[in-house]
Length: 287
Ligand code: PDD
Image (cartoon, rainbow, N blue to C red; front, side):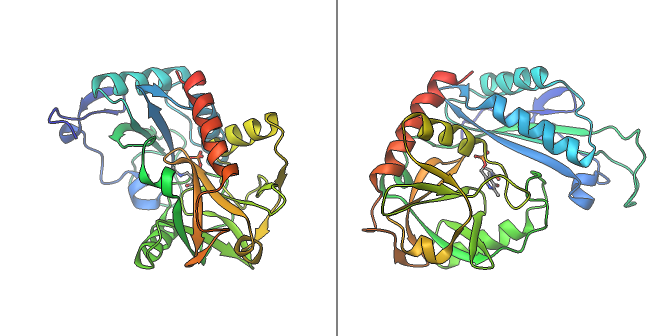
């Protein structure tokens, strides 16, 4: 991190992180009553910005939080944060909560939502995981029934990642009734021995990944057979390749599941190609 103080955005103001403070009564803190988004930054530009804003609007709509600014204004805030923090590669985090009020499950409709954005430096492109792939460990999916809402209630994912780390893996794959739902913070894929790319279709069972949306469109455009359907852990064990996508990883090969190598245990051509395609397109469409 640079020695300059990090500038964050909080409720209309750009200020050093140390000076930003929130009410202890904020419902994001007390109830997890809020929504978040993570957008990648490459070469100082926002990746898939429109997709993240569309999902943000959907998430807040589903839980009845009114965004205090327009999505155009959010883009301006994000760009200004990237500029002021000299961020070339990393992430922009956005969180909007219902606001602060004395603790009560019910809330009045005139609460003022809290809007917080900050940047985080992170290497995304030339990283070891892109070259070597990653190991995943499977855990039971302990989450709620509306995983399509990008809620800040992330305790099951925190627990899943902690367990995966203890088992030597860098991501957890959450499994429910023998089916892989998704990664703790990523979308999950397999490639069958006959080259079909398989990932679960959109429903309330998973978060609709923005990286997934962009990557699948590119895969189809390039003539790859894409099947949107659930896949079982057994299928994953027998797959030729496996992979994951997220704003914080783009497209990465999964080379082992619970210590068992996927295919030959090395990143395979389909997922590697998908990463190249994704990055090429991300650069072209970055804002
Ligand atoms: N997580 N599934 C889950 C459960 C996620 O939390 C994420 C993203 C994804 C991938 O979505 P996208 O491609 O839009 O990033 C799938 C972010 C990166 C996070 O929580 O940090």
